[in-house]
Image (tube, rainbow, N blue to C red):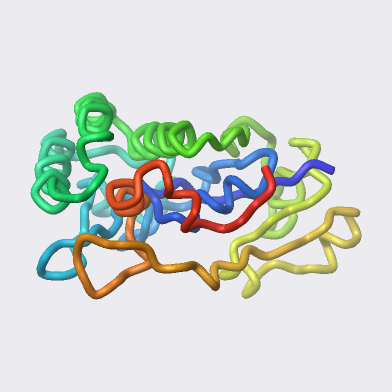
Length: 232
């Protein structure tokens, strides 16, 4: 059995995103999808002493309502330096900040030279997978032929990747036609994001839905202890 998940790339996603990657054999970044504003594609949350704070990559989106994520261009290269300065300000006193500081600063410098949002998102997703020792294959929807229809396209991607089981995010229940997966002989499951334990956060109140960087800065090598118990 080969398990597949298909999801748009997000900017330094939360722990649940990486648990979804850990749950499958191949994770397909669905950046052929339309770019959505005020979403997780180009921004994420971190903790500050004053509460939640958005880290947002500036992109060229005005008047480009139909553009795809893969075609979304970064509009200001200064964002990377600003994001690292913000993280250093909020997390320098976190127990494991120093362990990752050099690597993450280097990555931000490299990301500051990239042109597209997809490139930045992939670089961070790949890096965090390496830190968490996630062996899942990362691929792009652009690597495969795409079919028409929301559910039909997902099934087609699974079939092209040799998948026999598909893991979906829970929000997709609103549009996925379960019967089509059954007819195609592909097992359909939905990710469960409930039951996460709290971990020692530098700032309070506790927040689950922040970037994975928060978990790494606060727990370091023990990060997986606060994620899903998944056999990989």
